[in-house]
Length: 152
Image (cartoon, rainbow, N blue to C red; front, side):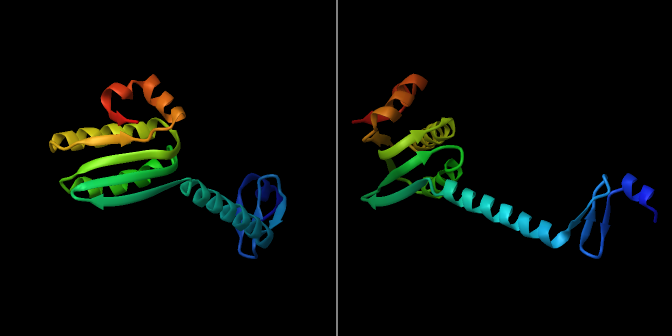
């Protein structure tokens, strides 16, 4: 194979070198090391993002209290959704304690609305308590104050 062929095609050489279209060679070990560093950093960041909300559950006399701590957003809402699916199978009232919830996004609002509908279909009650003023502003602007049973 000649140099002119190398410029036209992308070639992966078994001697741990990648050939780019411009004809430059990069040592595969250095590239792999830098990619691993980037991958591990992204993995670390995702883990940190996923830890931005804690869910504390407490069951008393047929009533489930769920305390949300942190941010309920696009990243953390699937975790809450999975846990709520298993809890909704039980026939019980649900109380959301939002005293330590700092932020709620539209994904979090969707979960609250879906939970309200599922609980109402079973003739049970869902209550939201201890809402911080910032979160209450979001609930007010979006109209969820009229939909959800909110106690202060």
